[in-house]
Length: 267
Image (cartoon, rainbow, N blue to C red; front, side):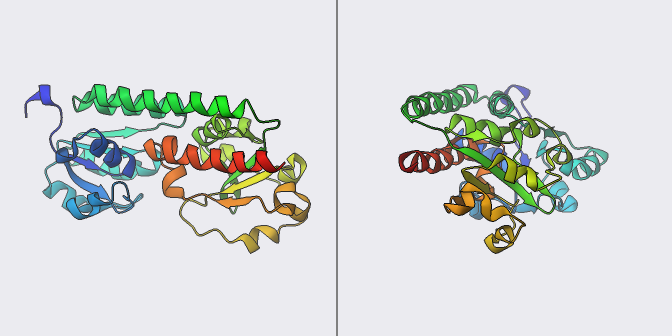
């Protein structure tokens, strides 16, 4: 391998890396992808699937002879450990905030000699935030927002989601909880806390599990919450908003902004 060209055979254990490499025009470097990959759709036809989020086909990965495997977070630590034991180079990113996502985009771009592409993507996101802020400044009121990432136990949104809520024009009622880097730091131990904060909008994304609104509406006294009374409950595709990459920064933020804008026009 010519080290100046960067890794030539990359296995992507999560979809944000795949989406970014395609975005950079560097998809020929990819030799394996996650079964959760949906962006771009063509990747599923062009690349072999070698993993889910928590499991991987180790033998198949070894057969692909990657010079780099890229994964995400402690959830994939057991996969990373096994691959390292097998002598492979492994990069586990751990981005939890918008700035960390932007840093990951820049690092990946630099790694594959696509630094300019990465910088352009980051600049585009920052431009979108600025344009949204001009619209938001015209609103008379911003909605209070509760984001539910899991239902049993209740877990509120991770840090980048809280930040995207802010950029999109909302007020995250559990912004302080969101800064915890582990899910256990974001536990809502008493559902009455949600009732007390009385959000105007409830956003739900149960990590790929189908949202059941009846289950939410059956919670004691939740009928008193403004979002419930006014039918402002929305499911957001987890493959978009829970992806620590371009899907959440672009499509995810736009979805949130459109919901909040609609609320602001009616409140």
